[in-house]
Length: 350
Image 1: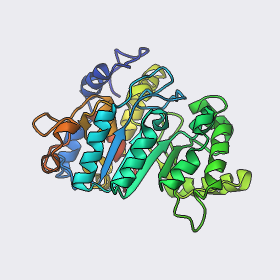
Image 2: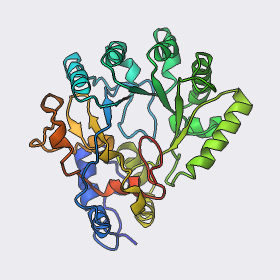
Image 3: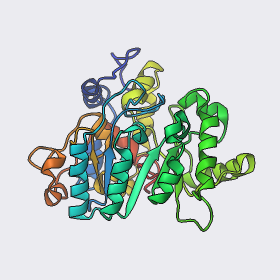
Image 4: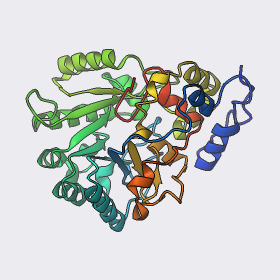
């Protein structure tokens, strides 16, 4: 067993503390570093393939405070990307014809320039615009109730978290009353065509385990969700993405306080799957934070593991050629993306 954690019983919310803990906290004995696992499989150093997805964290404002949230979003967060940096993002997307824009948060819809930004991205020819919505935002304030129509007009692909198809497990993870509001929001999206057969309006759901365990089979979970949501509520959707909870931010704090950290990390390492390496999201994605800084993925973003300055670490210095030749930064949390069937923001990868 890994030696006892000095940090057990305490929280590590600060990103610098978390990164230091992940680097030095538990792997002195019998578990390999992620770097070593890549070396054994001839994938170190890890490099990108081709940048196809531009994932933008537009800000941390959110109407919810979810236990598994790896960005620590909530109602008390005020960070939001400036319009100047949003303009730079649009310029990069247009100039380099990056096909997919993935807008996340927080609740991205709460950003004051959200609608303008989506419309501008459409005007500039972005092929796919993804909005990661928590669903309940549609009911949080009357000004958000027309979002389904706005999404449909702009052909937005909606990706939404729904921990389970039953109330108890969903509310346990995301807060009391969230399940009922999520169901109502999904019905609103279905009414304008989302998830309906023959419609080009796509809505996908995201499943995260509610505790310190791995998600089950994505295909099996999707079948269960589709059957139960249709039978119980008449709700339809396109795909389900099963995502492994990575040991960072609130989830890392939970693992330490609940004394599950050692077992969870052992499990991730034991389930390391070399077949997942080719599909890692850091290989075809650039993550951008609300201040415009660049990262290999949104998990590295939460640990403040910025892309090196000499490559171009800010949106104003965006250099596609250098970025596609860079060495991807890794740490022990990366085991979460290579365990079992692998995990990315678009579900399993292997």
